[in-house]
Length: 163
Image 1 (cartoon, rainbow, N blue to C red):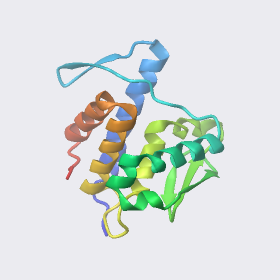
Image 2: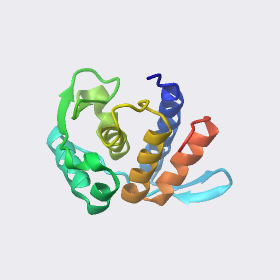
Image 3: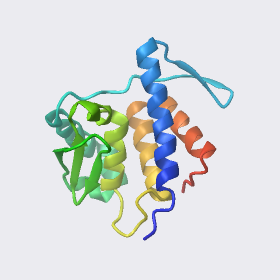
Image 4: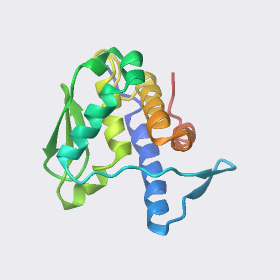
């Protein structure tokens, strides 16, 4: 199945991660997005593959996650990935780059993106509307509604379709 939104989804998410990075660097969490002043919540960062694994296990065990997506009962494994270009999900495995240049991926926004893939159905486009809705829900419920608002705004600005 064609993944027609992939680049638009990645572009929007790169902008959001940049906002969170600048908020951390400047210790200034308030941003203006589409005319609204938003205070960005703190995003968790991970120091090891083991901590990413523990986080994934905890998310999949949350009652509301299990009630919302049947695949939450299927565990996911986390492993290191060579290189620094991207995290990746395939066949119940999340691969995260851990070398020095790949540390950007050891963060909550990236891990939730990969979990949104895990929770989806096998026959849907990788970054289609159903994926986007799952990811927005995870971000909104776990990181916070402000983070989901910013993400939704960047998706909207980039022409990403939601369900």
